[in-house]
Amino acid sequence: MCTLEQRGRVFVLTLTGDDEHRLSHALIASIRSSVASVAAAAASAGPGTALVTVGEGRFFSNGLDNIWAGTSRERLQGLVDALSPLAADLFALPMPTIAAITGHAAAGGFLLALCHDYRIMRGDRGVLYMSEVDIGLPLPPYFVSVLRSKITAANALRDVTLRGRKLKAAEAKEMGIVDAVCPGPAETAAEAIKLAEQLAARKWDGNVYASIRMSIFPEACRSIGIVEESDEEKRKHFASRL
Amino acid sequence: MEPNNLCTVERRGRVHVITLTGAGEHRLGPALLGAIRSAVAASAGAGALVLAAEGKFFSNGFDQAWARTVPLHLQATMEDAFRALVADLLALPVPTVAAVTGHAAAAGCALALAHDAVFMRASRGFLYMSEADAGIKIIDFFAEIMREKVPDAVVRRDLLLRGDRMPAAEAVRRGMVDVAVEGGVDDVVNAAVGEAEKLAARGWDGDVVVEIRKAAWPKLWSKVKDYGGAGTPAVATPRL
Image (cartoon, rainbow over all chains, first blue to last red; front, side, top):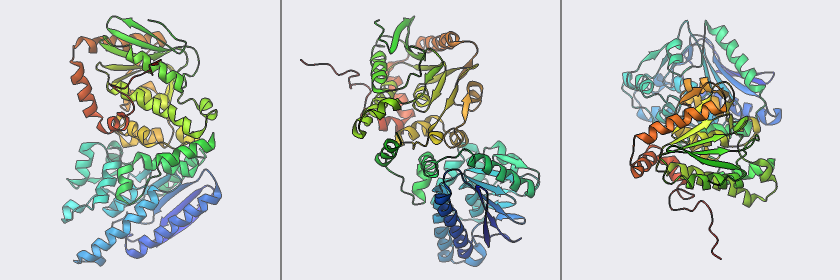
């Protein structure tokens, strides 16, 4: 399902196997467990860590496990509800996060990539695709919040959500959705790890980093159930560091 | 106009020019913030306002040295004074132009962005949100300035989460600054004053300018309006 390794200051979470990495309850739980390990390890590792999430095979993730859900609205809603806490884990993670998009990322899979701070994508194959409009499903409210937070150009947001546009890496980069394009999956993973190392080398205090991230995206955080620290608590933190 | 030792004011045509004086970092402590607020209040009758600075810095942010000398509950006065200044600028019935003549970091960067237009020196100086590097969390009102004035998610991330130091040319390209001005401090100020004159010449109804500005940045206005703006005195007048 997924593996976690630590390479120096960089944690690498890999979605394993050459399948679609459909976000089932099992995979979501597995990823959450890995992310929780990363957060715990960061606490003892001290300032200066980073996370890279990468996929094996042709897919980063093809989204929620619609196949298992079938026609059951209950099952589908259950999956939607299960993904939200994972989004929260990532938005609250005390370190920079990078999605190495090594294959297709559709619907919930695209959302998972957007929950990271940076996105590096292979340019030779694979698309980013918010498929809901094409398959006749409304977007869950927190999906919209995250999309609106991360894709701020109005026409880009429209193309992604209302046109169901399938974005190759180069187009996504032009639209500000992807930060860098690499020739193939190996280069994508390598570039992501390199960026992770550069960001880790800045030695940011993880809690401060996460706090700043959450203050940049308050609506997305609210939509996935994160309660931001109060200004009062932030001021106390500032005072304690003077 | 009487200069104080923190900032000077002068009129150039219809433009009220406030200059943060001296070669220092123009750290925004309560004293300097109070002086700037007084200077802003003295702009009555002008057609536009320019805020500029002498030396290498526009402003390097809050006065943390001052904050170290006071207990926690008094540190809020610096933050409150900054909020009040932003409110004053938002509620000012004339167009405002920041002449970023040098480095603008943290609160200094936010102060520049609180103006209607931003001119910046091309050859030296950068915008820098230093909080991530300094290990300081960003309170909601600061985040709001950045959310409203830097709407692009990627630029905001690079500035706030990566602590990018952004020189003028890049800031213009990324939509944070209006014009990068070649030359020295005086050239930047002259260019900003030129723009301010053009804006003043439009002869806009001041009340309308204020209402439109508050409507353009509604969340920011809501977070500062109780601290300053029209109706709140810039300086406490002694009653004895």
